[in-house]
Every structure is written in C-alpha cells, then in structure tokens.
Image 1 (cartoon, rainbow, N blue to C red):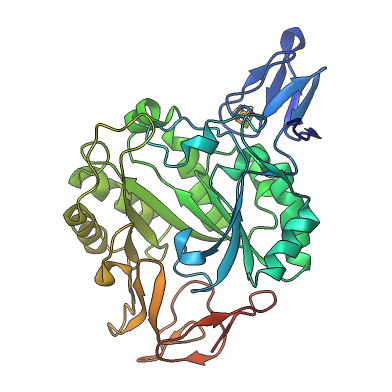
Image 2 (cartoon, rainbow, N blue to C red; image 1 turned 135 degrees about the horizontal axis):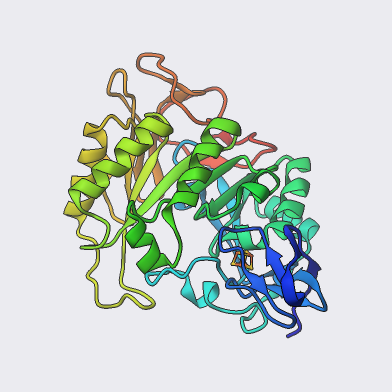
Length: 361
Ligand code: SF4
C-alpha cells in the first residue's frame, strides 16, 4: 500500500545533502532516501516528507477516562486513532505493533481531516484523541484535523510522551484543548536505557504546557516493577511536579503488563499503586489516580476541601457525579479542570453535544 506523502514542517537542510528534522529532541540527520528514527519522516529528493499524513491504523470510540483524563469533560466520548511509528523506543511499549511499524507495513486506511471530524460527529463523540502512537511525529496531520475539529465544536486531546522541541511545540499544540503527557520515569538512566530518550526535554515540555499555554494537562507514569517504582524516585517525581507545576495537576499511576521487549517483568501489583499514590498524596499532590486496575478509592476524584467523593469511577466508568460545573456540591470548592456546565448529582450517563457541550441525562 502506497502511503500518502505530505510536505513536512520543522526541518532544514544540513551538511552533505542531509536534512535536519527539528520536530523532536532527536534532531535526526536524514540522508537522501532515508527515514528518521520515527520511520515516518523521510528525505525524498532533498525535501522532508511525512509518510503518515492522511492514514489511520484504526479508530475507536473511547471514554475520555481511557486517555487518561479525569478532569476534562468527565464521561465524554472521544474518537481515538493513531498512525504508525514513534520517536521513542520504549522496551515496554504497549502499542508496539503500530509504534514499531512503518505506515506502509501496517494495515491502514485513508482518512482526510474532514472525514475524521465527520466520523467523530456521527459517532456522538465530543472530541478527538490523537493517541496510540505519539502524535508529535505526525503533527502536520494532527494540526489539520484539530483545526477542523475545533471549527466543528469538538475538543482536541493530545496523548503524548511530550518529546517535542521548543521550536515546534507552540504549533503542535495550537489547537489542542487537553493533553496527557507520559512521564515515563524520573531518572535520566531510565529514560536513556529503557526509552532511548532523555528526561529533561519532557520536563521542559511539562513546564511550558503548564506556564505558557491554556492546554489542560494531566500526567501518567506507568509503573514497571523494579525499574521506576521505588519510593525515592516516586517522591522526587512528586516533589518536582509540586514545585514546577503545582499541586493541582492530576497524576495517574498505571499498571504495567509484560509486552514487546519486556516480557520478563511481572505485572504491577495493585499494592504498588496504592503505595505510590500514598506517597504522592503525602507530598501534597491533590489529585492522584491509579489505572489499569479496579480501585474505587484511587479512581475517585475527591474534594480536597471537604472530602466529598465528587466523581466516583470504576476503571473507566463513572458511577457517581457530584459537581456543579467545576464546584463541589458539598462545599462549593472549585476543582481544577474543564467540567460540564450546570449542576449534576447522582449516577448519570453522558450524551453528545457541541464544543465542550456535553450534556448529562
Ligand atoms: S520527529 Fe522523527 S525524524 Fe524528526 S527528529 Fe524526531 S525521530 Fe527524528
């Protein structure tokens, strides 16, 4: 299958006929006929092209809690899709069948931006999630879809490892409303050995998102037994978040399952998630969640002022909802995030609407 080629942004000519890609901190030097680390950005005749433009490796309608986002339109449905390739090399990748595939090696379907927006609307979604493989590497495509989605009243959700350069990030995120950034560990050694990346650029992206954009940001750390789940490392991560991003950024700890090149490690025990969540809360982070397990306590949004259970979840399902817009129905405290307007109580199901216009019935 011949993939669609699209002119790439964020590059310039370098020495000996090579092209320097400036989209992510790898800064690949790409020779004629070659591709960068992510596979999909290629040098064709001295021009950088993106081979993933206009193709999807599959669509799904997901609850937004699956991204995971717990403080952005709870219960909303989002049309999720990705392409192929990735700019990190995580040995534990849970989507390696697409992240390690070339777009021309993977079964994919043509999907123009307007068609994707129409599909989101026709399936009752309130937003589109750019996910599965890292959308940074297909940012030209994501931007074109997100622009059309915003015009149609849909929210845009960017699920990423945050491995993007200062040169590119303002354009990459310009139409995004929310993001979940994977903070894969909190040592340079882990990033270097296990992801083939570096920690510092991810921290830089998080600070920039929080301080210089209006993009609602949550963080996820996948805990791998014995590699990134030590008390000290978790405490340092939480202290860094508290100091640089503040106490209100939701932090999700999720359970690992053996996959790709990391099949010898055991699954993350539920007790580990309980332990690290307690560390995060003790350090002062107000919204700490656990994922990929059943844990009502660790999946509920609690009011930090009065202790009311505001959004009770079981895995990705909402069981109880007690917010008036962004305010606690118990004491009126304002909860950070983007919530559905109006007063809602009890156990409710969500329906579609326009831009952020999700209604509860
Ligand atoms: S986006 Fe791809 S080609 Fe560009 S620097 Fe990153 S890995 Fe290399």
